[in-house]
Amino acid sequence: MASAMLEDAVERRKKSNVKYASFCAILASMASIILGYDIGVMSGAAIYIKKDLEITDVQLEILMGILNVYSLIGSFAAGRTSDWIGRRFTVVFAAAIFFVGALLMGFAVDYAMLMAGRFVAGVGVGYAIMIAPVYTAEIAPAVSRGFLTSFPEVFINIGILLGYVSNYAFARLPLHLGWRVMLGIGAVPSALLALMVFGMPESPRWLVMKGRLADARAVLEKTSDTPEGAAERLADIKVAAGIPKDLDGDVVTVPKERSGESQVWKELILSPTPAIRRILLSAVGLHFFQQASGIDSVVLYSPRVFRSAGITDDNTLLGTTCAVGVTKTLFILVATFLLDRAGRRPLLLTSTGGMIISLIGLGTGLTVVGQHPGAKIPWAVALCIMSILAYVSFFSIGLGPMASVYTSEIFPLRVRALGYAVGVASNRVTSGVISMTFLSLSKAITIGGSFFLYSGIAGLAWVFFFTYLPETRGQTLEEMGRLFGMEDTDMAEEESAAAKEKVVEMRTS
Image (tube, rainbow, N blue to C red; front, side, top):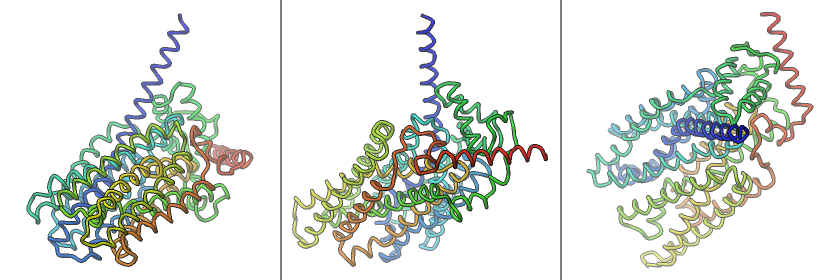
């Protein structure tokens, strides 16, 4: 009887802690809405911006893609900022920057002011897409980390859907007003986010890096299955941060030499070990292939793609685009429940394989329609629509969320913020190149040829994922080194050196 009551109490505690961790992950991941909203809203707003400001296709594709380049500033600054002021307040900072950018775009009177708004919003987006997955990975227990760290991608898709809905809702406003309302209203979710973030705790791993062990222990006890699990996680994080296991207290001093910025750059970029080099290449490759396989061309330019497929009415275009957003959001929700059940590799390989087939189908349909201008070819139009829906479905069930999930969990603690920022930089640069060249590429090799090219890149991605990325499901963040070739002896030497540094510092202080 007593045993049954104890087990029931443990189970209730476990469920309560999972709910709390989920609540924290949801709040942090809402930062990703601002990127999703911008992607979604620009796909439709571009139609009206081009008409109202009378800009060329080259100016339009620069306007569409330049935000990704600007976001590099935010993503690299976010690594240092989050290590300085904490993960939580970095989310607030990101929301504030995007708020200003959205207002600038909404009140833009010409192309130059609109580009200025894109710059400010881009910096905010860079902060958001870097910090949300890092915070979520650091607060989530290993058993549910895949589920929780997929939340940023979920909210990107929700943001995209909201952007599509905004296009449809405000499309009937006067030309000079409609696109400005579409862009300006993006300030609302960022303002709400900044207020709600104060309800979540700081990352326990950041607290340990700052020597605040009591605060870290309190957070871990709220997000771990059992008190023993919380103690074990704290011990692992202390070792990763260079704090000896036997050193305890509410606040301790962390060796500055191991947490300095120059040391982090040295460990990750300048002279990485073979294991760190493989981790870095895995992150950069995953982010590169996520964007190089053409997702932004489909999402940002979906009205243009549907028009090429034979759909010409603006309302029908925006309505069909909304269907893409709904499909993408539904399948990312499915992915959140599969990440910790099916594993990272099976989802990633299945997703990429499905994308290859879908891109070939889309390229075929667009090529057939393009070769018969003015003619109605129902089966080709249907093939294009089905291929786009299949493509975003396969992307959302694997490659979409996997970039943030996988990258946020594989880096060691000391280089995690910078490592994730490098991955995001690869992602944003590739996204910027794809989105700023799609219209020109379509004119050069036809729109159908563009998607055949993306299918070839997706094929290379499948080979890279199959040969290079190990399965990480169920591993703690502190155990990842072994999966990438870091020997136990190397890890022990690193921990021992950290402990010795700590002892020396304590004796001299």
